[in-house]
Image (tube, rainbow, N blue to C red):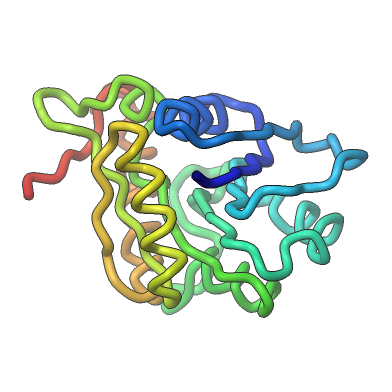
Length: 191
């Protein structure tokens, strides 16, 4: 059983919390500004918008040492909604990993919407969480927790694959914002 800390209490944080508890794991949820309590989870989910990640890291870097840190962000330009804010050959996850060298950073949950995590379905397909990371044990731990919570997980490869996951997340978000796909739908994976 894992103990999970989720920093961010928005829709995604709540949906991920539901998966964690459905799988019999314990969870603690922090509001973004809630810095008085220490993070105690073995897995820490950064369920905040990408622009807030730097502040979270500045406030909690020492608490994240040795932990599995899950980046769910899509580094999208929220002013224009038409580009990513990281270099084309990089990713938010790689920037987080560079800022937290003593943590095991993985990318996950960014290609799903909160509604599909909560329902476990994308249309007629099961919701699938794609996971990228360089630490096999961290990915296996996270995938096991996700599967125990009733959602499918697929290892998408090394952390460098986060770039492609962020591109998929970006496309899905922009389609939903333009009302081309529903916020309760999105992309599904047939495996």
